[in-house]
Length: 422
Image 1 (cartoon, rainbow, N blue to C red):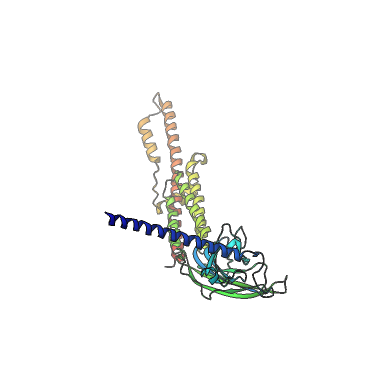
Image 2: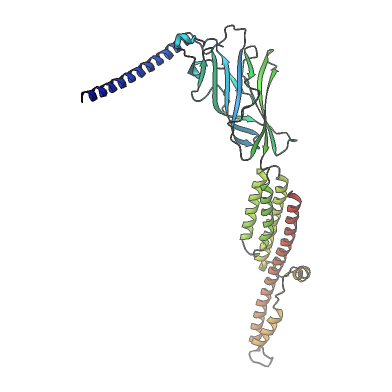
């Protein structure tokens, strides 16, 4: 029992010693960093360029790592992309000897405490056009013993991407130009951190594919200042993956639906509803993609024309009593000629009217009720004449529908055949 108690006591003592040793290391480590930060920032001014000689420029190395294409707004001509923006420079006032600080070779320092170059996206399209270093939340930078400051900041960039009239609809060329906002090349020497753009973090887009990214550095003179200014431009070449191949098929299906609104009865209101629905869809397609705009515009014209003709035939059918009888020339040309050709049968009941009226109310001049019979016979014949006129207008509306159906079916088929490129 005594030996067992000694072992337990030794284990507890060793555990306590380990905890105390780790606590001392943590306190000592935090003291070292605190002393180092106090040494670095005792006379530090983040508003002054950190150079030993004010006549010498400070070299700033920049790079971007594209992460995701958020939006390609063709109408507003704006490119929105999530990137990692990287900057690296040497701060002459953030150097130390690692041997004096327990071999501490780097520090993580909040970016707001140190000097930062005023690098901005010159073709910025965002509402908040601030410098890339003026951020809404605190970021940190890694500072090495030789004064090298390394910062990587995730950010969302919106740049103007104007399109020329000669550019292909399936490709886009966009630029992002970074430069100091006020410092010339005599104060900030802007260079590329790498000639190649890292795309390992990029998430592919469903519609647009990055074909190539070029990074160039140029020197520009502005009318305001005699000093040259340096900028770094990243050129993105995008290619559409789908290239709108599904759109013409959709437009073709919608266009082939146009003639079928004339199959509905002339007095039906659903035919106007169907035409309005097709017109709305065509307007949406017309404004969605400029490549198929000409085709969509022609299809939209056909839909509008079909709606107008549907209104005309519906008006012809519903207001038949106000129009009186169909003129003889129209009856001969449309009802007798086109009607038989388009399969609209003549359901005239003239012979039935006279036969039935004579059979049911027949009489002779010698009958006592002959006048009453003639009166009733006139009422029945007038009723059947009105029905005959109504039937002729209905047949005329049906002839118009059959003619429109055939014409629009031919026009829609020809439009689809001549516009879809398989």
